[in-house]
Image (cartoon, rainbow, N blue to C red; front, side, top):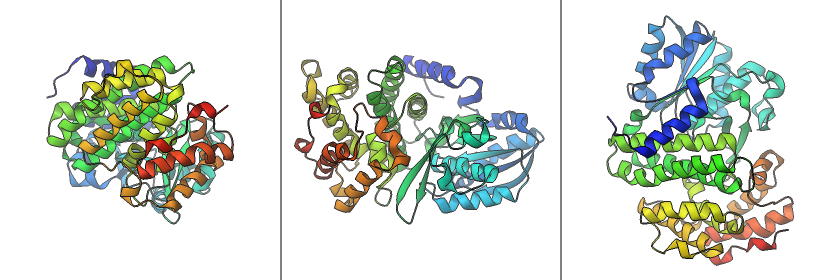
Length: 427
């Protein structure tokens, strides 16, 4: 049983305020799936990820559903990593041939994302491209949520809590995003100790994705009404992940660490529900043929931290303390400001990455000029415009993207922070 400290209790309080009775998290909550599904109707389909099938997670969920007298009409395989379009269409077809009042998905972020998209197609028809962007499903649903219950099995994307679905075209190796309140699951369950069987690399990827959610939203909240709330949520989420990730990597079965990572990545989900990610996530969508989403964001974010430094000084002063207390920053950051402070924080982020054997440049993971061009073109795609809008600065034109984003990506390619432009040149 995990030990609860003040940070843990604070995180629990924030999540309860965020989701209320629609979210069961922590210890022994898998058995509550049946209670949530019972409300939505007698017949249901279960979509399961591979890990849930290989462990007792799926069995526990099925038992909970049967104990409530529910009728499981089918159990389908979930999606592969990155939620490929092909898997979405396959699941949508299977749903269209089945009888159900609700769908229970049991898996990680990709499995949940694909299920959101597949249930959309099975309910409203069309092709998946019709729904990329913001609010396209609500135009047909009148705001009604899909009858989806999400059982999370990995501390990572927060997909079980959010309005996002990331779907990948394996032909172009490009990921695109559905953003819509209609795909927020009706109810969510995450029993944190089920993550103890996850391999170290998946634990690392998910945890650093959680930091990216917190940090990108926090950077982008400058000057907005949400800033105080985001500051509280993101600071706590990053603190939990930075402090407990090394422990979980060293001992996968440390329940204190697993609980903390679950809370920290869930707070990342909270963050992206009241704000939005930006540069790191935007770039990661074009790198799926090279490395995982969490690693891509983690490579890019130190460089965007420096680019955005004039507009995020308050955030930098606070986050610097987290990395300094964890011994990833040796300098006295109290004496730093401006770009120097951002560079110290960026180096702290990079030191954390090195400590868990993450790559720190695009060059070392095999990226090329072609990938940089792909990221630049994606930034100019109207379907991904929300990522530019979420930045703490304005990049309203293609020329802004070329002038400021391109050299930042080149800096991330070579690991040369001197290539990052000074943002005071932006009007």
